[in-house]
Image 1: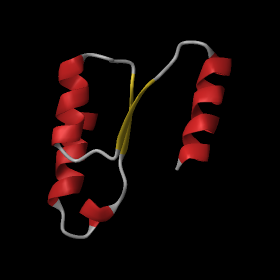
Image 2: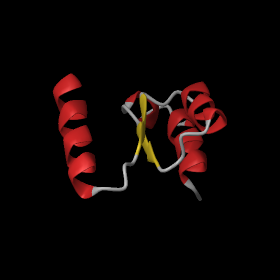
Image 3: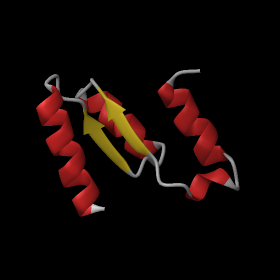
Image 4: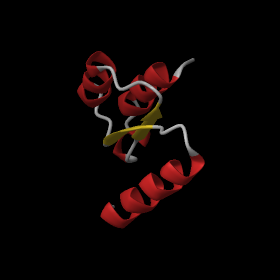
Length: 65
């Protein structure tokens, strides 16, 4: 099962569908982002290559939520 299939499974389950789901992917393709939101993802983030960028992005994301 890949992440897209897992998202569909989570959001199809009456108990689990309320859990916020954040997609963390290397893909920034419009189709991938749209598919995630179409399947009720709470947020979509692309992974930066550099560790310091990843750490900074996770900090900003945590501060936002």
